[in-house]
Image (cartoon, rainbow, N blue to C red; front, side, top):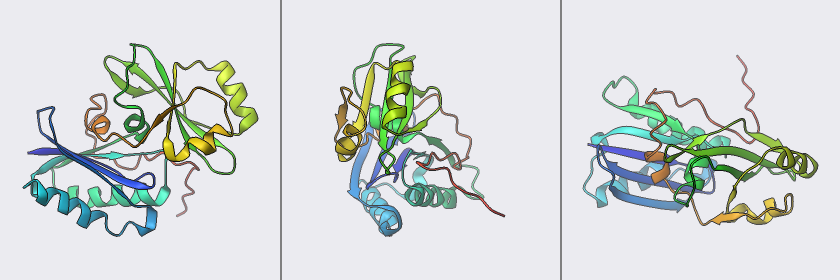
Length: 217
């Protein structure tokens, strides 16, 4: 049996597969894909599984990247997994912040705080704080959407050892804050798989949007 991680919060889909109860990654891939144009998500996943001789029903645990990111992309990924888990008590699922996948795999000391930074558009950034504790990255504090003036005040009052950003958003974020940025060339889905703090609660509704969703009856 296998555990899988899927994220479609940005401009590419990332997927990773791990043997249940083991640390080895069976396959890991990424493909440019965005929001409502991501109709190829499922065929792409099925193709990766076929290449490695794994059937879809062999995946018993699904982790979905919960953002921050694209409203449409995150809902699409979550809806796909909800469809697989519906009425099937044998399949477990959970959300883990995309921020964890962005910051995963770097050298940290216990207690280090990491500001993962995302382009909020409209000359704003979204800060999703993490802390490295007990050997893993965990959410820390509350996310914040900040313009240039607010960001200066925020980072004066809140101390971080690391500032992490995706390379596709480096220029936009660099226009708002002047901080030593750690630039990542992509998400690390192994970080979603290895988020041991997150429970298998079968709740894929806890998505983090750049802008809060508006719900109506």
